[in-house]
Length: 421
Length: 81
Image (tube, rainbow over all chains, first blue to last red; front, side, top):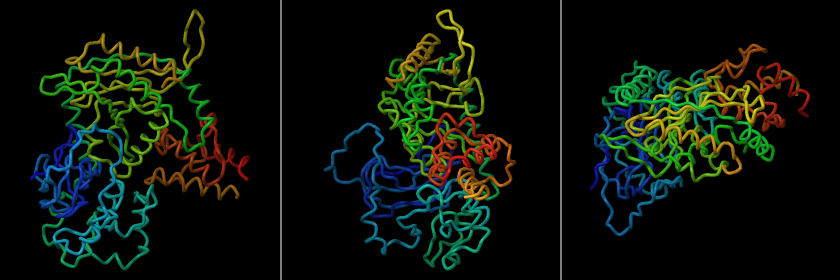
């Protein structure tokens, strides 16, 4: 028997609110299956299990706030027949075990709301809006990717008479998760009791970021290095590559940057990993945490896994998928915890140089500014080139400037030979 | 499709990208990316939607020329069928 606890989904997480269970007692789960959706201060995240088993008891009700480390469910281990292959965290998408659910549905105890197999996909911002305006998300039709409900859908739903008014009469209006169609609605201990409704999610987001960044500046002795990179070769190559592609498959300039960072980390692995309990822990897997800003404010840096092994097309696809899910509320817990280094790209805004703050317990952060045409001297000739300033913020406990310099040098080298990316 | 209809399609696409915004309030010479805070990922999505809905494939080299409503509408009016 295993106790399933609220995982820590990052240095800045203290607690999470259970939005919904994706399983019920009796369900068989496999390692890396998502079993619950938890709303953190930053986003709605799908929480995965670490081993195979059968769900025995669910101890937490949707709507409840749960501290990191608190027991949420009890999972019975299966007989040791199956070998638990210690596969390395790869990016295969594990299909959710959905088949056996239908049959067992009837026996669902009333305390667990039947959220159905098609759980409601909604962006965190949409969830918040829906809660604020007392809109039941189940009555809203999503127009986002894969039917995800976005803020505009909620606004539309709040303004107009819902298209399916029959469903609307049910359940507590402010409830933001599934439609508890059962008449025996869970009484007083409803979701809104625990949730400080007045608490602005922005405030929570800021507090979460504040905790992580304050810890970083308190504990990590940062050193900073910067290098100006001539991007002409990479950009010319990318332009000709993109001409060969339909518009849907075009690769953004940040993709070769992420790939070059990943390859440079193979050469200088000391920057990739963690500083935990006074020890330098180098990670073999290269998982890039990519900073994604949210439209409603704040940032999340979920991980792109094993980026050094991906070709640029795969990496673009993975990035697209990650951004879409970050903004629509479909991140998985492993993506929140797997990053071994962070990359932030502020070039879109015209920023020239990033002085990054490391996300603890990681060892380094790479910042990219805007690529700008600049005078550039090479071989005694003065010309105009697209120049990008890359910066490295690194933990001085783990590495020294010499090693950091070797990393930037390797990064530059890879960007001068884009064909090999 | 006349200019006004093209504009409506553009508004619809922008609304999808920036749901909390009101694209119809954009000034015709306002920088859309800056006003609506659209990053390069969403800018690419904008051009993908333009391709899907209006059948105009904007080459990468032209991205930089298309910053305002009036620029985009002028660009599209010479190219779409």
